[in-house]
Amino acid sequence: MSDTRLSLTQECQAIATHLSAQSGHTWTLEVQDPEHWHRLYGPEGACVNLHRVWNHAGRLRIKGVFPQGPNREDCLPYNIQPPEITVARARGAKTISRDIVRRFLPPYTELLQPAQARKAQLEADDAAQNALLTRLVVHECVEAPSGGSELLRVKRTSAASPEASLHVWGRVQITGADAVRLELHQVPEALAHQMLTALDQLTLPC
Image (cartoon, rainbow, N blue to C red; front, side):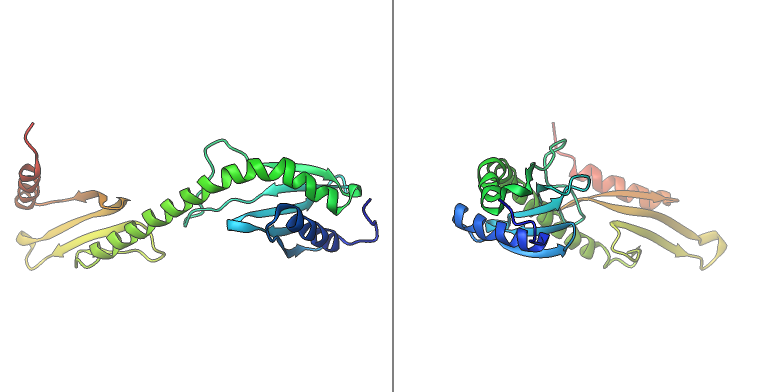
């Protein structure tokens, strides 16, 4: 049985100790809110939150934590909720740890590995897009807004004389590792012909 004199921190530390022994992997406690919840870190990026159930102090909620992408994207499949279980604190740390190993870790581990792979892919895509962004801003007519936005402002003005005035404006949006959405306004006819000619030359025969 659980010693009611134990604080939540002491209780979670005991769970980490028993969980390490029962699972064969080291689990360490990271103190969060001493009165409400703590976090356990396990092998290969595993991370588990232990919450005191807000309306039932005698129960503990064990919930899996999953990685997020570089822009805080959810790495779990759509409409999949993180696994969680609740246990009675009075059962004691050793029994709670056994429940975690038996009821919680199998479904959590099954989802964790593909989530980590998804995170790695998102990070690679983000790095590639940032590299593309860097290559585009070398052009004088392209300006990158502050804050690292993927939207680039395009502006080219020449007003040597009213008759020869030029005011092209628009934006570039990064849409992939090697692709952009280009939107231009007030493009002079000669420049439009040059751009369309370049597209014609890139068209592959059917």
